Amino acid sequence: MSDAEILAVVAEVLSGIAPEADVSAVPGNADLREELDLDSMDFLNLVVGLHERTGADIPEADYPKLFTRDGVLAYLRPWVTPASDG
Image 1 (tube, rainbow, N blue to C red):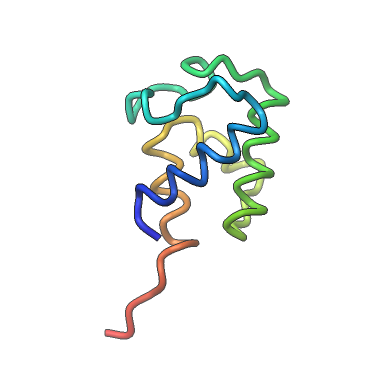
Image 2 (image 1 turned 60 degrees about the horizontal axis):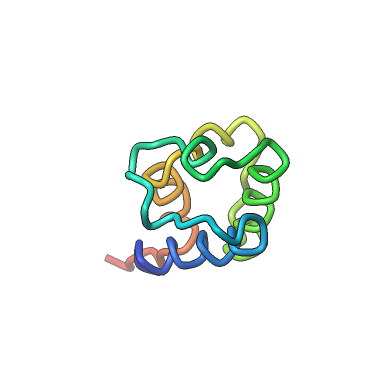
């Protein structure tokens, strides 16, 4: 899955939480919670939705890694990108 596809999954999950949220307009290193006005329950729903869509195990200790768009991409890449056999 490419970064664009990962962001599409994030946008889809967010559409059910905060329909007006536009993750593509958020700078990569900006805090998604602040930029998209997500409260703690919204953020938790985002994490749960990402887990359901990608199968990524996201322990609570790793939640801070998902605070930015760049962080979400870095965290999810290993879960959604097939390992090469090289």
